[in-house]
Image (cartoon, rainbow, N blue to C red; front, side):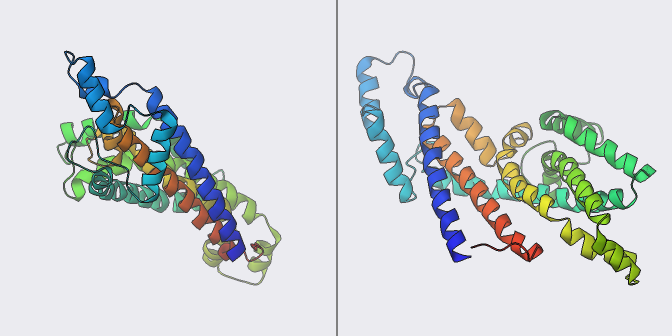
Length: 306
C-alpha cells in the first residue's frame, strides 16, 4: 500500500508540473494584461514601468521559473485586478463558498441518484424504471446555465420563494446547488442502475436468496456494496467536476466563489489568479481520485495494492 501511494504521489507531482506548464502558456496566449491594467492613453514609458514592476519584461522561461519557485512555497503572487490582495488571500476568501455549493450539490446527487438507481434496477421495466429513465434523459440533456435560469424564473421571480442570486442563508444555496448537481444525479443514477442489474443476476445473490436472507438485506447490503465500484469511480470524478463545474453556475447566480473569481480573472487577464485556481482545481481532482482508488480495497477485498 505504501509503495502504491508513493507511486501515485510521484505521478501526481508530474501531472501538476505538466499542468503548470500548460496553464502558464495558455495564460500568456490570452493577451497582454498591460492592455487591461493601463489606460488607452498610456505611453511606452508607462508600459515599461508597469511591465518591470510585475516582471513581465523578463523572458518567458524566467517568468515560469519564478512562478514555480513561488508556487512551491504557496505564494502565487498578488492579484493585478484586485489591487492590494494576494492571490491566496482571494482564494481563501472565495473557497468556502465554492466548497459549500459543491458539497450540497454532491449530497443532492448521491441522496437522489443512489436510491432511485437501486429501485430502478430492482423494478426493471416497471413504470418506476421508465420514470427514472426519463429523469436521467432530462438531466443529461439540459445545460446547467439553462436549468439555472429556468429555476430562477420559477422559484425566484414567479413564486418568490427563494432569492434569485447572491450568497446568504440556506435559501440562497438551494437553487445553485440543484442546478449544479442535477446533471450528476442523472449520470450517477444510470451508473448505479446498470451496476446493480449486473450484480442482481450473479450467483452469490441467488445463493443469498436461497439461504432465506431478507430481500432488503440482499439488495441494500450485498448487491449495493458489490455494485459500488463503478459508481465510486464516477464519484471521484464528480467531486472534482462539481468544483470546476461551478464556474457556470456561480456566474448565473452571482455566487461569490472560486468559479466567479476565475471568470473575472480571465476577463482581466489576471495571470496570477488564473494560474493559482487551475493548479488548485487540478490538485483537488488528483486527491479525489487517489482517495477513490484507496477505497476500492475496502469495497472489494480482492483488490490489493502492491
